[in-house]
Length: 459
Image (cartoon, rainbow, N blue to C red; front, side, top):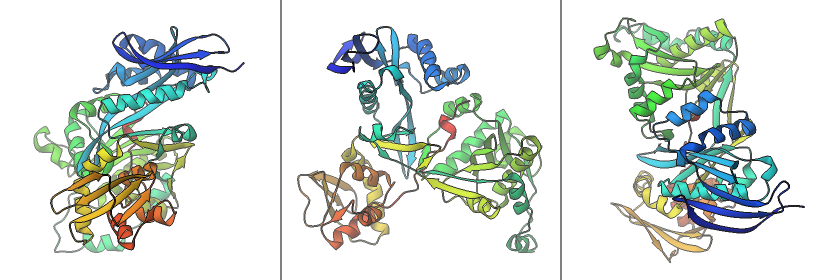
């Protein structure tokens, strides 16, 4: 006999907003399933549940999650049947760089239901509570990586990014790096250029955290998707042992004084099992990234001789270097069965947050101001008006120049995972006039959205 939800309601239990689900005809029992935020006393049962479902996280990983400076037990949503936990989801609340803004997001992970209780609406109830939690915390966007694409798409999620990485053998990369570049040789022998000090590549020391923070800050300003890391977040990341090694590139001698020595660190790379999780430089020299890459390849050959994988945005020049070394570059929606999905919780509110970016795009596109583009979103009418000083959204009208789109597509346009031009070519966007199409293409370009792997990597 199949089970089904006979009733579903919401009430406050023990001070927590709780979904009450009455399920009849369960294969092993009848009863009431509650879906609510977790409490500190739930950590032990949650860890055992996750081990049974995923065979991870390890005890060390789970302890590291609890030490996250932004973590609260209520960031987890649990489904219970009596005293038994039968479902779980965790939300990491973070800020990400989005051009000149910092947007709050919710990163959803470790969501699952006990196989015995699937197909009964429990997962949907957990996800509904996750949406409420993200909204309460002020998240503009939700992100997650999952193989269960259809389930989330049925609940308003959409493809929200692409995996971007390249792979090549360490020996081929070394061979490529050690082949002299004529252009660089000409610069080296140019008597008008001041001679450069030699680079020293060595293992990072814990007192040099400030240098890593500085380089990360310089590299992530104006990007789309990089996490904002506080001093406490950096300490947590470096203490949780989710990587094997951190290398730094130093300008000149290995002997540095602590005072003033941080500025001599020109780049760093964080590596695990041949995977370069993060590589940042200050851009002052062309040989910083290649010097770090050469040291990583040499150590990999000595230890395991496995392929080198570089995770980085598609515009990173090191991808071309790995391609020239006989490697492959991948930018795909699906990698290893996982898809990056997103959910814009309040699209119109996000539109208002992005008003300065819209204004800058119109100026850069050479269009005259003021500009007005109507938005017909699932039949609802809005007008986006760009003036020399700001931008605003008005409900109830669309004017002569407007585009007709779905709410899902509008969300994708807002975060730049698809451009208006591509959407029109795919017949997902209809423009009322040629001017409306031009306005849409200017306001909604494809953006280099990329989520770095280090921040949610297990130890």
